[in-house]
Image (cartoon, rainbow, N blue to C red; front, side, top):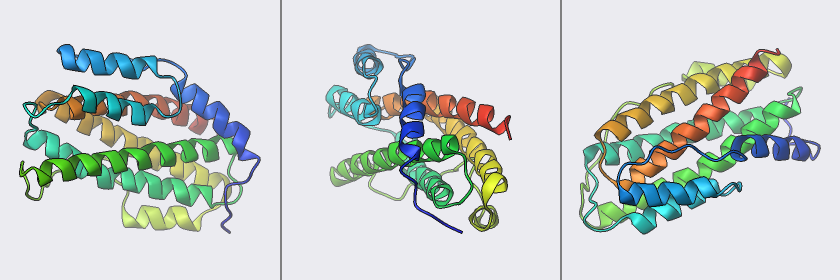
Amino acid sequence: MRRPVAASVALALAIVTAALVGAPVAIAATGAAEADAAAAVSADTSSSRAAAVVAAAQQEDDPGNEPNEADMVFAAMMIPHHAQAVELSRILAATTGIDDTSVALAAFIERDQSLEIERMQAWLDAWHGAGVLDHAHTGTMAGMATAEQIARLDALDGVAAERLFLELMIAHHEGALAMTRDVIDAGVNTWIRVLAKHVAAEQQREIEAMTARLGTL
């Protein structure tokens, strides 16, 4: 029932990656630090954009730009939120009868969000290590799939599995957009604000790609 990603998916992955990261990310920046970080991100059109946004934001951050609770909650909640997207993507990658376009899209999501998980965890660890808001952070994670929905996806094959994956991932991404809006409104840390705007731009493009594919099934 399950299989690894086939070599024939490589071309589709390249096409999907180019479609998702080929256009500059439109990031609304507020303040000099965010403007400089956003400019660096918008100029990068490679598949390593997630790393670039983090590096740019880190360069603009300084000890005075201490995060507030909204910033810390965003990172703490987005890590498990991203982790579920990675899980769903891996399930699809191991499913038979899936169109190469969706397999490639899932591979892109897994790679991009896995990197962002690493960066957000390192950011949290750094601030907690400095004694800033070094307590547990709880908040909401919108758009999460239920255990029952994940089990159903894992049991399906072919078009039925692809359709369910797209439906779940679109809802999941829409939940992430809500989370980014919340932290952009309430957060103060440059690193988090630039990252949130990157996540919003990236996942909006992915929603559009998934919605287009869903319309063909």
